[in-house]
Amino acid sequence: MTTKWFALLGMMAAGPAAAQGVVTYHNGPTRHGDYTVPGLTAAAAASMKLDTSFNGVVSGHVYAQPLYWHPKNGADSIIVATESNTVYALDPTTGAMQWQQTLLSPVTSGLGCGNINPEGITGTPAIDAATGTLYLDAMTNNAGNLHQMMYALSLTNGAVLSGWPLDIQAALNGVGIEFNSKYVGERSAVLTFHGKLYAVYGGRYGDCTPYNGTVVEVDPTSASVTGTWQTRATGGGIWAQGGIASDGGSLFVTTGNTINADGYGDGESVVKLKPGLARSDSNADFYAPSNWQSLDGQDLDLGGTEALPVNLARADGKMSKRVIAFGKDGNGYLIDRGNMGGIGGKATIVQLANGQIKTGPAVYSTAKEDMVAFTNPSPVGCSGAGIMMISLKPKGKSPITVDWCAAYSGDGSPIITTSDGTSDPIVWVVGAEGDNLLHGFDAKTGAVVFNGGGTALSGLRHFQTLIAAGGKLYVAGDNAVYAFTFTKG
Image 1 (cartoon, helix red, strand yellow):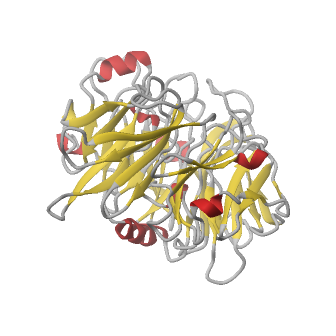
Image 2 (cartoon, one colour):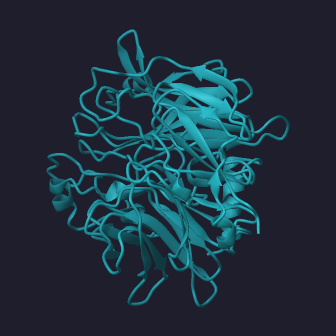
């Protein structure tokens, strides 16, 4: 596929500031995690270093990816949301606080299960660049009422906009839809798309029930729910970091294991949705492997990662429209997104890991090739452990091939930078809950171009995702935001 095609999609979906800002998870609705950083070649990457003049102080644990707000008029900001339900805008040069907003209290007890405490803002927020609004979901404790709440904040000063927050539980219960925040978690990124806001929900660590994988569509002009989709069986949580992705027309989610399901109930699936979220029972609009019941029984969610739309170049010059996802079963699933095939439908399934794949992948796309990088605890097909790069082809005996593996210790989610949209591709990832270092790899060969510089970061939570903006790399950790700079060659 062409990089230009997806760049245009990102601008249409995110608004006019998207070319210079980072307004959503992995820098666009495709969730590809691709960034253009002029001057960041492999040689320049060797000069990468921690910017000691940047002092970004926040309060709370951080699981969400930071964002970068680049308004038409006014100062740029790094936006960081914490589990303490506090949102910060920081100066991207100095780290000085521009504003902060503290929402309703996070939850510290009373949940059915989970491993995040306190639990507040876990999923990455989203910016509507056209209106200068930040949208986020927060788990809140309001006088003992534990509810998932959707907020809209002004990016000018952090003020909560009139009519917000929206109580997701109350809105769904009010129309007869089961949703109990005591059991429902939200760790996936919010998406703004075609004038609507989308959030997805699953369970928590421990799979305490009842919960269902849930997609909610919200009209931001009225702060009201305008569409919902849920798994029919209990469970089937939607929990990947990117949550929901789009190819410009359709929306895609992956679901996890359903619980004690007598028959197929939308678990272990890649599901295609349309705005409005009307349910489709057509085989063209979902895929589930034929062994979905076995995956259920072993808690090996297909939904370990978000489903990424890719357009693969064919010899006839046309594009082969696919979607790729990775599961806790260690498999990669490459599926025709125009006709997904239903249960046991035609798909390329390749075992890539002897362990679970569950961090957000990143995609490097050119007119000739599509390559996907992801962390891999136990690679199949090449030596080394920690991170893997694969190539995708539209057809043939091996539509998924392994390009390289490299040593890496951690549970971060990678991004890919190029110097001009195509040249000098580099995979960047932090060793969250591992060595806590920033790592850079040549995307073509896997050669190390930066190995931390001897600076271990503090408080990096699993699945942490860095961003590239304003000529720097930014990483958010507990109570701190870090900036890395480099010298252009």
